[in-house]
Image (tube, rainbow, N blue to C red; front, side, top):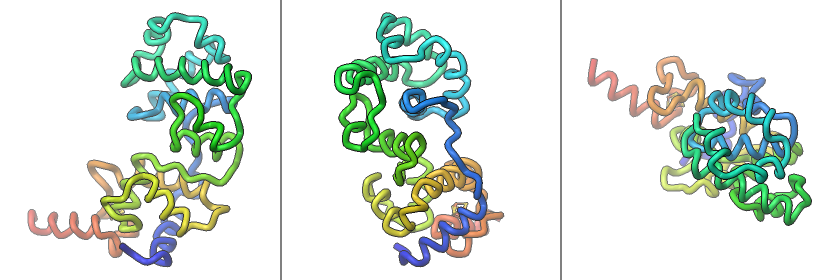
Length: 219
Ligand code: SF4
């Protein structure tokens, strides 16, 4: 694993590449954001935005999601993956929101994570994006990028990845860094075809070096 100093230098390079990175899930309030994050599991933000563009016109409150049969909600979100599970989770979330918090999204990590269907990643995104509280959610992009660069170990779980990045990056930068790492993974260090040949981090990146050497052998 690389030193904290080196890790921060790498993250600084990524920050400079994507200075304007931000949440790409379209939403108007914390409730819509929470629903959008639940819908986004293993699906692109583009697909979620396409869906929520109409979904949020029909469903505005937790009651709205509970006033329909599960099959109707499933039908309304069936354009995205895992829609059956997601429909079930949305109704469970809305039920627990009404029971515990009067239908309002709570503003602490602990309360958010007490809601059905809300895990640490979702809670971190909501705390950061909706309430501006320093948090660093680890999604598939953040995990892949930080492991490829050697900031974390391959065997680290998502909580260990989160802890490591939060140790390296100053707290006031956590929210921005979260989006910048996502943009870097989404648009540059892609899962299947990372752009190593034009990457400013190639020299120091263990995964990039491995790929570069393999490509030389193939040539
Ligand atoms: S060198 Fe390749 S694998 Fe490494 S960070 Fe850059 S794009 Fe990703």
